[in-house]
Length: 72
Ligand SMILES: [Zn+2]
Image 1 (cartoon, rainbow, N blue to C red):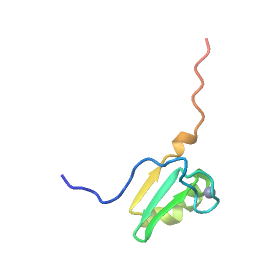
Image 2: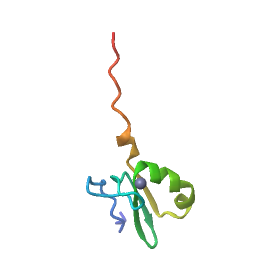
Image 3: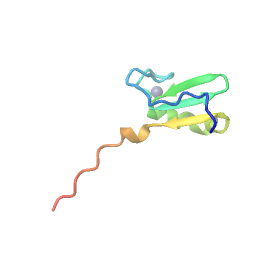
């Protein structure tokens, strides 16, 4: 069993987007270090960064509104 050196814990409320300072929901691990993005900037930079990212940690599904219970 191999141990990964990458810290991929859940993002915290104190983690901030590197572009706009909003709460971060995406962590991009690059050779040079980590980048944090909000959902908006995560998607904006995804096409450029994803091919070079060592890891792409996306919690933007937490941004989705809770499913409304079906009404009878
Ligand atoms: Zn942002």
